[in-house]
Image (cartoon, rainbow, N blue to C red; front, side, top):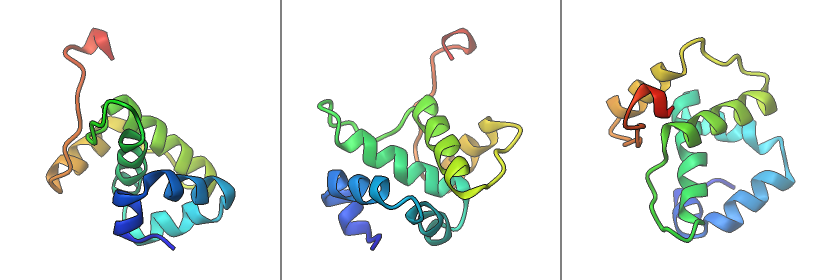
Length: 104
């Protein structure tokens, strides 16, 4: 169901399937291996369907994705969401950060 091809080439369809079958969040989490990777994939797909065409999610978009996946799967949300950003960056997944802490 979740192929990298669908996620990258047809993100609208991929997101639609996810919204139609909430059980697929658990599969997304399992296939991704970590909450941060799953959230990155979800946030990136959402970015790809936006008119701007930027496929790098912001920290805020990543946070929304983390909360959505956690709610759908019963996974605890880490106390420090900034740790997820660091984990993404460690794995080569770029995240756009706010210019300052006040902007967050």
